[in-house]
Length: 104
Image (tube, rainbow, N blue to C red; front, side, top):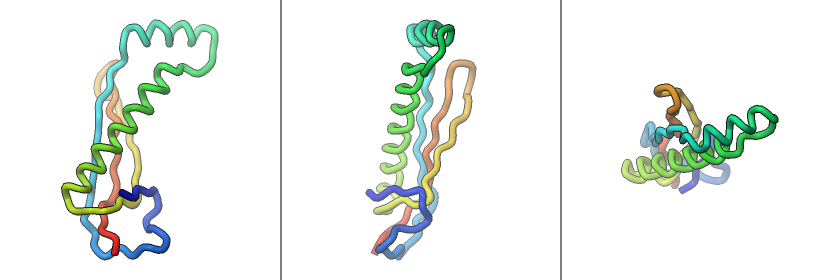
């Protein structure tokens, strides 16, 4: 499956627009990670526990978006974007979305 943030794929013709495809996941912080993050916050630097958690969330959202696209008959996704929102204290949703298309 080709996934791109561009509205087109060079060298390929879009023969059919399937429509919106999406995938999301909600992740909550973990007490152990919060303790490590708090310690890192005191000394400065990247909070790698949260960086890893968000990277995993983005990958999960992408995989769910691809599954949605395949279910709708798309073989590529264009104009792919991410959105993140806080659901409740200590939990966030990562949404991946784009336009499912069929390439000729």
